[in-house]
Image (cartoon, rainbow, N blue to C red; front, side, top):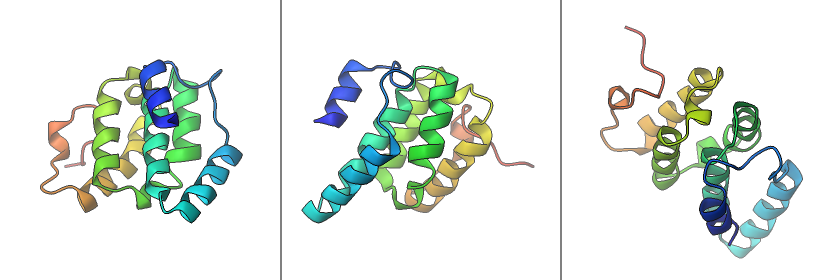
Length: 128
């Protein structure tokens, strides 16, 4: 329900005044794990980040919720991140985007078939 609510009601307006803190997520992860639906929480984390309402919110959401869990994200989570980042300039124009999004590129290389970062101008490109 949270995923749907954030996705439908906070199109690029989630963040500063609409926050879910680390303790909330830790509680959700704990309960979701015991219910066998932990992967659903990753979808919530993605939806929160890609709907960040400003650069500061995007920085906080990435460092607090994406970075610590990105190694567990599956194909669908990474695809959602990549698409969502392209649709929200608050995620891809922020100053920490290149450093942070390099983690997404690394995970995409691991879980996506034939991933080519060069197709995505808003993701950090490999140095040549």
